[in-house]
Image (cartoon, rainbow, N blue to C red; front, side, top):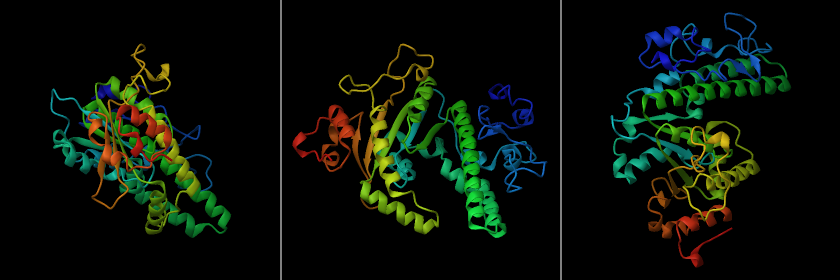
Length: 352
């Protein structure tokens, strides 16, 4: 496994690569910097979050590993009890796609229930979930520890807000870097992967293109929830967790952006008007205009009560789901694109 270590961080991670059977693969492009500043080793006192007003962030390799070496707890947890896909079988990269509160965490059990060939998905699938890394385990405990310290030791509300916002940004950045490492290690080991995204940017298109190149099946699962219900769910979840809810307009905008971006992830169809994949996202397939499309997209009606989800679109069998599909109040651009893939009776469509 030594060959997977970057030359840039090779010396620092040499002990990890030689001693661990599944070494942690750092993303060398971001691991050593935070907001364009080089981080400092935590042996120094003047680093954030150990010192609240320090200009530089503490080196995450010291905060989240033993003496700067070894595997972060979140990585160990991600691979616990997981096994790679059997030799000769093609692994699947599953994109759990959609706004916060739409039910992305429930996708895996639904796939196991709905698709017979996914019977062993639980045992072979590594979850890459930034929120889980940020909120759970070692990262979550340290974040809470430093946040409590900030609240206890800052005198003014303005200073408290400044430091807590900085702490939040730092720990989200840490979680992003660890999640990149989990993803790369899972790909190297040929595990199935479930990767969560809000879909508000075009980054999923880039990742799908990259992972298509590795010989994975790529599958996007979008659990659809009516926007009004999503707003209500988000408010309720914020009250239960004690965290501030996403501003309502921002949530509504994220729904619109996710649906527009999903159109470009739909499998190849000459009748769907969209731009070709950018050259930067074709990797080693310059002549393949559609390398950044998912090979399969499944749209789930997740607006009802828990346990009442239903498949509204499966691009591998899109003619079978018109009844559910017609109940959804999708945005017009996505509805029209789906209509091309799954020609349901137009008089029954409910467009906004």
